[in-house]
Length: 133
Image: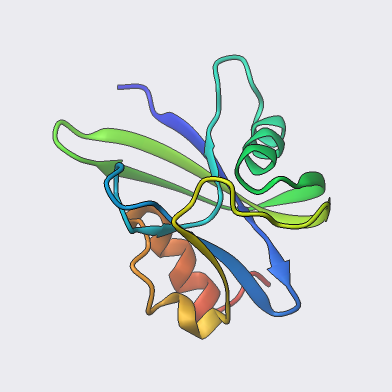
């Protein structure tokens, strides 16, 4: 089974991190996640991140660096997702919610109280306990 490549962006405003909640009724409805999505065929991770954040939040990523990877299996039969998380170091534009139920700037200790997608939990644990350093 080939893994599905997914990218996600960690966007900070001071010490607060942007978390996004999926809309009710869709796949994994009301679960929290970091913005991003599937890497399309022939696409590299960074351009995919730029495209997804433009589509979902209306921002233009100027620079980002990979900070965490995780592989997770969802469902039955299982679908393997290979997640690559990027720290967005700079972007242009104002964050605008285009696709989510809600977006929220969160303190790191608040992350553990939100119902995140299972594939994001190892990163949440690291952010809450150790930070990205």
